[in-house]
Image 1: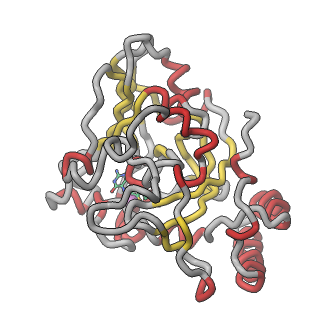
Image 2: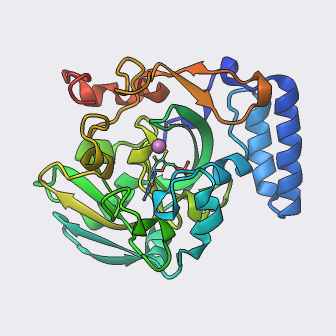
Image 3: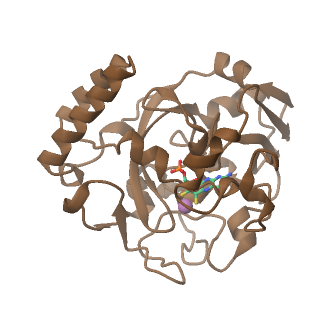
Length: 304
Ligand SMILES: Nc1nc2c(c(=O)[nH]1)N[C@H]1C(S)=C(S)[C@@H](COP(=O)(O)O)O[C@H]1N2
Ligand SMILES: [Mo]
């Protein structure tokens, strides 16, 4: 791809030097300990340019939202190991030329994965920078052939009461479901993530494959997907079903449209220690140059 997603974080986003160097040393040590020299190499080279500052592995994998395993931030890291992620398959159906149940291995044999370092902004107003590995959702949809009548894509997370201790609580209407307009789904920024820092994506982050839509609030990025359906009508989505006034279908990151109960103008970066104050939230989470055209002419106050 001609896109350079990984290089668009400016100097002002960088963590102060001391914490930054310390982080690099920690990562280098972790990579060496895990025998993952490849992580330290390219990451170190980019980090040296000061253009990006991904969160640490421990931050990304211990501070999570995955309500199927509990509503606490540390619940997913503690309990998501119970999820059986191999074998895994994804049913792709609806308005496609080649519907079917595709095994994870089959999908991975046909997709090319690459690293995408993206900002990640939760609707709760915290944020991270995450070095995902994954492939473009468009490539998967091209593989199955999208019919011209399809207008939206619906996604569904696994529902396994025996493995997911959180689904016995009616926090949400299980299974977790999400959706995108077809042009959003086909956008080259939209990926299916299968890894973080070059390792398999951990269960708490949505193993074995989860959606990542970096210009939308985090809850759109549905985890542990078992079904992808091409449909004609806008599909129901979990948080919108739970509270339509607070969570819309689009959920584009927008500092000018506040959540009814809190401001979305700023965010709290996770990590960075005592130097890291709140920072201003960027329109479309900083991806406006790439995605604003998708919403031309739409009233973003109405379609929040
Ligand atoms: N199935 C499922 N997907 C989910 C969630 C969830 O509870 N269940 N939480 C969402 C929310 S609110 C956020 S912020 C992100 C968190 O992703 P992370 O834990 O990898 O940072 O996952 C999203 N995807
Ligand atoms: Mo979130």
